[in-house]
Amino acid sequence: MRIDVLTLFPKMFESPFAESIVARARAAGRLELVIHDLRGWASDRHRTVDDVPYGGGAGMVFTPEPLAPAIREVKGRDGHVVLLSAQGRLFDEAAARRLASLGHLVLVAGHYEGVDERVIETDVDEELSIGDYVVTGGELPAMVLIDAVARLLPGAIDAASLQEESHTSGLLEGPQYTRPPEFEGRRVPAVLVSGDHASIAQWRRAESIRRTVERRPDLLDRADLTPAERARLPRPAAKAPVRDADLIAAYRSGVGSYRIAARFGISPATVRARLRAAGVRLREARSTQRGPTAAEVVRMRATGLTVRELARHYGVSHVTILDRLKKARK
Ligand code: 9D3
Image (tube, rainbow, N blue to C red; front, top):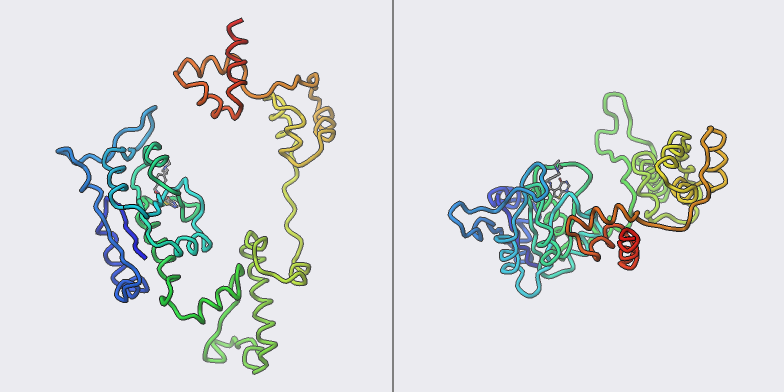
């Protein structure tokens, strides 16, 4: 596999990949990793790579001029281009496996508030985030991705470890112990020193499920559980009850009772009954008109947005937009 990285901070990539699995994969010729300095594509005197955002706002945005040509040059004919960005889909083990099956990756590590959307549209195949927290740039996320992918390349780690990984798939591991058998008065669980391998396997499986339920219940939906194991799971925590104040605020803002019902997972009759009980005067059942009002469309149209762009913005067809514009002219 070949991985090219485009970054403004090439030095950041040196020491993490001088050691570890990635270094071994490189030494063995399984992975060719090439780090490129994006400033090499900046042609002006100041080697500019960023500019202020149109529409205002804090921070800087990667300009298209050096970035698009850099991506095009490095990707060649077969590169799969990944932008590391906080707006990306989540990079998880399934994504790592998918990327590990490709021959050539191009990673773009941003270091600003973002990248000009036109580059993303034409030159980026996918955007990935490593999780819901803010780091200062795309470099560390790119390194995380490289590490997770490199260890999946054939020959990187022994088959037994990968086998065990898929065996416990989707669950957290349970507790581990080693010698001594007693540490500061606490003994290793007796089952682990019993020599009864069936009981040990059963105990480990149960601990693994218990821990997942406690710490990462979000994993259970996709975990590999037998029907019997699934049936024994504690029932999921109840969702927070719907608050009157939220129903009232939504209704007063103009949303209809059917929409509110669908959103909060209760029936329209319940919504109307609770609003009435809370003293809210109910509106006449609304006409079936959806989408923006004529006045809203006219104001946005005046900024220069095209009918097509307006349709996308409001999530309606271009016919609806034309209809509102016609209504406004009357
Ligand atoms: C105004 C909000 N911005 C700053 C708080 C958004 C923002 C800009 C740039 C947030 C992060 C970054 C830099 N981070 C990345 O480029 C990034 C990232 C991340 O922050 N978290 C998880 N995965 C990734 S992948 C790239």
